Length: 323
Image (tube, rainbow, N blue to C red):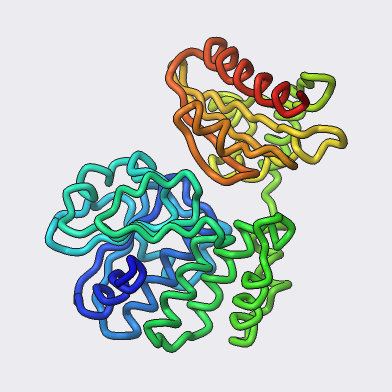
C-alpha cells in the first residue's frame, strides 16, 4: 500500500482530525486548510483548523476562514493531525511541540525541501500547489465538492502559480482548475480580491522598499531592505509585505531578487525570487526552504552580519551559474 493509499484509508476510517498549516499564511496554506476541513466535514468527520498566524484580510472572503484558530493549542495527541503546506516543523510556530507529540502526523506538501517529518508523508514536488494535491485526495475519497471547497482550492492553486504565470503550472493544473471553475466560480472577481486590490499602505511601503534598491553582480541581482520600524512608520501591516519582493525579480536583466526584512536587532527574514535559478537550494544552504523560484529563510543575528552571509552565498550561486 502506498503512502497516499494509507493516508486516504486513515482519512476515511478516523472520526476526529486536527488540521494545521504554516506561519505567515499564504493563499495555498489557507485554501488547502479550508478545503481539506470542509471536505472532511462533508463526509461526516469532525475537524478543528489551526494556523500559527492571522489569516491575511484578502482571504477573509473564503468560507470558514473566521473559524480558523490561532491562539488555542492542540491538546489531544491521540487525534490524528494533518499538516499542510509546511516544509518543516519549525514553520508550525507555537504549535510545533504539540503537533510533534501527535500519535499520527499526516504531512501533505509540495515543497521539494520538505523534511518528511510525518508518520505518513505525501510530498509531491510536481504539484503546482498543496491545493492541487488536496483536490486529488478529496476526489479519490468521493467527496462531493461545493462552491466553497472549489473557491478555496482555486485560491490555493492560483496564488502558488502566480495566477498561472509561474513555470510550476502544468497541464494537470489547468485540468484541475477547469473542474473547479465548473462549480460556478468567477475567476475575475477572485483574482481582483487576491492579486489586484491593495490598501494604500502597501504602496507607501513599496515606495520605502524601492528607495533601498541595490544592484549587484552586473545588475543580475537586486536587493531591497525593509524593517519593522519602516513598516510601522508607513502604517502598513505584515500582510502588506506580501508581493513586494517580486519587484526585485521583475527588473529587466535581474536573475536573483532578495528582500531583507529586519524583524528585530537579532533576527532577519530573507526572501529569494528568481527567473531561472533554483533558489530553494540557496535557501537550504541557509537553513530555509521553499520553491524552485521562490524561497526564503529566517536567520539569527544583526542585520549587517546576516546580509554579509546571505550575499556571500547568493553571489557564489550566481558566479557558479555563469561559470
